[in-house]
Length: 206
Image (cartoon, rainbow, N blue to C red):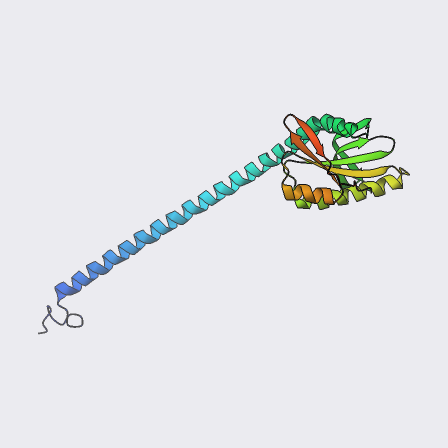
């Protein structure tokens, strides 16, 4: 009769074999628990990502509205002060149009929008209002002025077109680049605005 307690599996005793089975079951149980915890962590991470995306979308929408309202408020607040500063330079603008002056094509599509438009019998001054102007804003405003010029010529308005950029905070480099482009620099000074005109500054006419 064969010995049932020895050579049961690769020379193991029956008791050793049972112990190996118990160890394997414990390992499987531990692996299952690890998989369960990993799945729960993944589900929690996915939930947090979705919540983060929702918050980002909500905040982006709110910030977009705030930026628009800030821009509208800034234009209405700075427009009278800007007009006064230009009048001190001898421009004497009689008409001031804050709050967005749109130029549309024949199909009604908006080609560009100007924050503040100052006008007299000889000159039209288009002002772009930014919290902190950047170099790219200069290029964009020049294109805006070209569109304004072409539009006015199309209705036989031959007045000079000039431009300015107004900002609450102007960097030294941005200020220099704005002047070099022939655009006026309008900067916040306390509760009002100031226009810096360097000795070698020549306003560009479009």
